[in-house]
Image 1: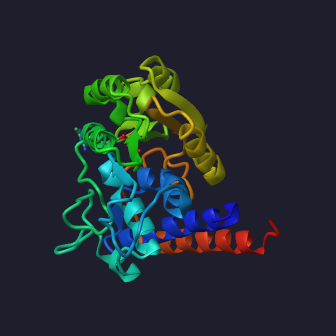
Image 2 (image 1 turned 120 degrees about the horizontal axis):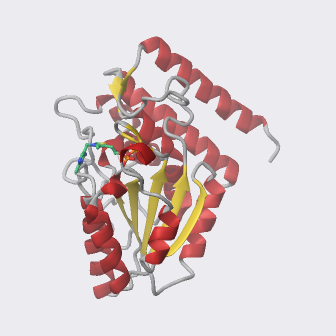
Length: 280
Ligand SMILES: Cc1ncc(C[n+]2csc(CCOP(=O)(O)OP(=O)(O)O)c2C)c(N)n1
């Protein structure tokens, strides 16, 4: 995909996630919006996948450890054709295949069940180690939250991934500076996460997490180093691109009205139209 196509894909991911959550009028809006551009970069080219064969052996794996942000992942999967787009409106309702938190036994394309923060680090390491042991060339992608990095399990994993030289593990931190109940710096300051992972022996970068091209370039750069795990810290904004959540202090899990949804949806339509009109 071109940069413009990726930007449009990211807006569509936001639109689709909001559409799904609008049925109940509530959900994890903030963290789903902040990682939408990452989902676009991954499913728009950086990650090997086959919507018609989600269990394809040659695929790259994705572990969304901040599993409460399933809606952003489901939106990308629906738009790529892993399941019918209309199914997005069943999010978190009885009998759905799209529960609030990611479940690999329910959703086509979800590689790992997540939701208990910190655990996705360990499961992703297991997947990456398994691929390395079996000499598969698949990459394992992992998405952590910055609040999640307060979990000790993350740092235990950071040590072990370096020890095992997991060069095909590419992790991201959605550094939106907020967690459930406020700013990470006020609750338990995680500091300079790029520097910390570098100190743990990882190849580490920090980039604008809303720049789809920068994300793809950072992934390409990471792939050039084969003997160390990779961390890409994404500087993001919680609620990004959603009119009723962006710039709002508490936007972790929020209720919203049909009118708020319609305004947010219309703003994303305008963004898409502007992108389509632009020359480059
Ligand atoms: C082990 C564990 N403790 C607490 C929670 C409850 N919880 C869900 S989301 C969240 C905040 C996560 O913040 P962050 O990782 O920064 O995610 P984001 O802001 O990107 O949504 C918490 C504490 C949980 N899911 N797992």
